[in-house]
Length: 221
Ligand code: SAM
Image (cartoon, rainbow, N blue to C red; front, top):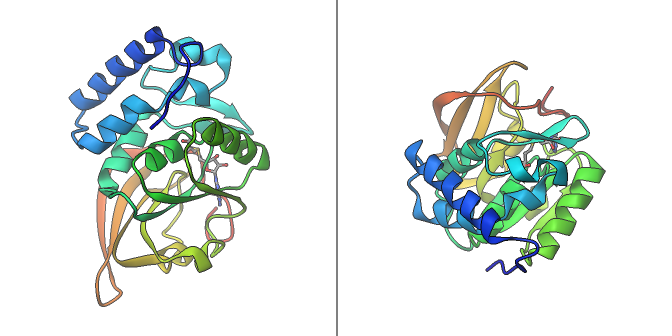
């Protein structure tokens, strides 16, 4: 459980966070564990202090290196679609600010998260450590088979837009595991859910439209 001083997480921050979570519930977020984690993780600590007063708006913000912290609704939606259970092995591609990673770690999953920008990786690692959240954060190309020997994973979440499903990731998914990944062009993507069937084939379910920064790498853009 995250415990912070009032200086780091004030009553004003907690109140704003609660109102944001209520807004997300009105937008269709119903999973109790996701709602609990959204209320527990202080989003304002994952973005630049100049944006602190806007941290609990349902908006994406720049985090440096031309990247963004995803909109809270997107984080909540992707997490809800994964149905994460305590103790499950989860792989995230695109650590970015570390906010999504903190939500997954707070839900009790065994998380591995990969980021290609070392600066973002380092600040995310520092913040997760400060919050007392356990996660294995790696630097590199998450579209490759970098985390292969740590798998198979029960759940995989890709937080950048891919041109197609990277087979290296599909191969790291456990039987009955789920991957959530935005697929499309550089302007717009459709979120897809992939479930690995016992025969090794995938059930592919297209969901709704989103807009992400591009997934860049060996099996990406
Ligand atoms: N999950 C992040 C958060 O909570 O802040 C949002 C991430 S941002 C929308 C997408 C991230 O994916 C960026 O930080 C970007 O550098 C990273 N990324 C893009 N391609 C990647 C790749 N092949 N491997 C690892 N990270 C990648």
